[in-house]
Amino acid sequence: MQAGREIKFRGKRKDNGEWVYGYIWIIPVLQIHYILTGKIDMRDCSIEKYEVDPASVGQFTGLRDKNDREIYEGDILGKTSETSGLSYRYTVEWDSENARFMARGKHFQELVSDSLERCCELLEVSK
Image (cartoon, rainbow, N blue to C red; front, side, top):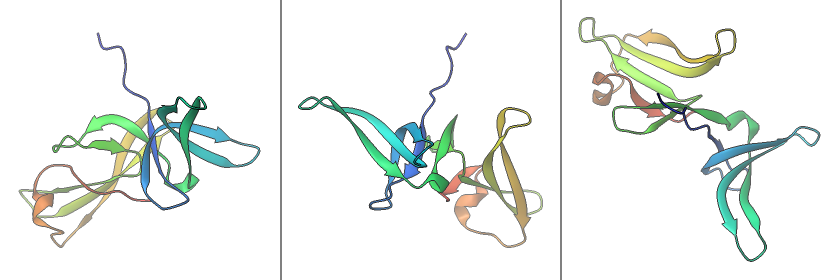
C-alpha cells in the first residue's frame, strides 16, 4: 500500500516570471500567493519563498509524462491518433465535482509536431 502522493505546487514568480516549485502559502486577506521552496536560511531561520502570480499556480497531479517530467494542473498534453492522424491537446484541470484531476481536450486536423506522435507527451507549460 502506497502512503500517498507528494503534494506540491508550482507558480510563476512575480519578480522575474520564472517557474518555482514547492509548497503553497496563501494570505487571503492580502490576496498574496507564495511558493515556499523548503530551503532554509540558517542565518536568520527564514524559509525561501517567492510571491507568485495566482493565475499561474498549479498542483502536481502525482503523474509523470513519458519523459519522466512532472505533470501539473494547467499543463497541456498532446497525442496524435495512429489510426486517424488527428492531433489532440488536453489541458490538465481539477474536477471538483469528482475530486480528481482530468484532461479536457480538443482535436485538431493539423499535425502539431513529430513529438506529438508519442502518447501524452507534455507539450508546454501554460498559464
